[in-house]
Length: 412
Ligand code: SAH
Ligand code: SF4
Image (cartoon, rainbow, N blue to C red):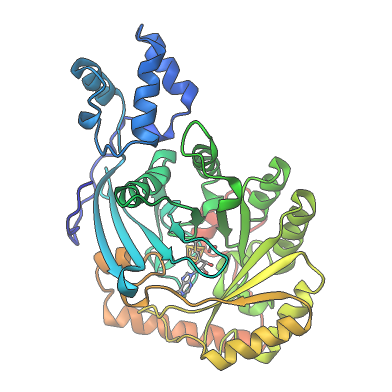
């Protein structure tokens, strides 16, 4: 793996047209070798190098004759990540990776180590990105601030996992969990995300059980319904943040397309059809969504559901006027949910000092926005949230970026 500091001006260039090997199914790889008149064990050798070995480049696959290595290299990319910069925090328990892709697009992944505890084995969880940037534009999120650059290819999603697995493997450790909670809205790149989950799941490829994979969405209702029709593939997490539409319109602009009641109804159907508990996430922001009124609204919304709520203090983001909720406010919130029978956990956010909320490293490389722009954004957020807290719902339509990312999915 190349590890180097990624320049702030990692320039956009043309995307490498060769498909990534990690995006191919075992049958597709086998078919390529068969079409060239090669014996089937060659496909297995390459497949093993991609999925099981420690090789970072096709040149390192020494079991393959040089001419065949060259042919594979002409047709495919062994790795779709061209450079990776690593940053450690939490005394080495959190490793944040900034990856540069072939066209210069930057994406992040975060590897979190959880040491063994009484009755629990050690875990190594990787948080990965599904898009470079994001169109949804949640104001507390560093990725939302960047806007959408592009969807990731299947191999670009999976290669983040291969990178972490190689790093762990070098120390004799194994990746135990993958969460799609990095940059991007996975359900707005659903075909590629499903193909990536398939690669992670497939015993002939990465071989990680569906129960060890979580996909988080800000509430793309048609995407949730599509997942429900497919049956259980992974744990579904919904970024709820607020149960009242006026406030959720501000915190998750996608709420103006699919309001919270529709999102929760789709999640409920998903839980009923798959038998799998839905996880809800709420990023806790001081004085904004952590009030008693909000806790009661969330308790009423989720009362009696097969659900679990995670409360996570907000990671500070440069362009917002907001701060994380204090611990006692989060505890009060959790107690109200708990009293309504809603299973709730308070999570500590990892790696604050290296910006572990995904998108923060990429935002840093994109450069600071002009102070006047930041000031205007902050002012607007203060106004919008004050209006929302009075319970007034804005009559603004679906934001243009969201409308462009969800064409034909509901009225403007
Ligand atoms: N787009 C998807 C998945 C990526 S975001 C989604 O929104 O669910 C993954 C999680 O990180 C979401 O729950 C999101 O709300 C949370 N998040 C984003 N910015 C954060 C911040 N500054 N502090 C804490 N959590 C944050
Ligand atoms: Fe996109 Fe999720 Fe960030 Fe919202 S929280 S902007 S949906 S990545």
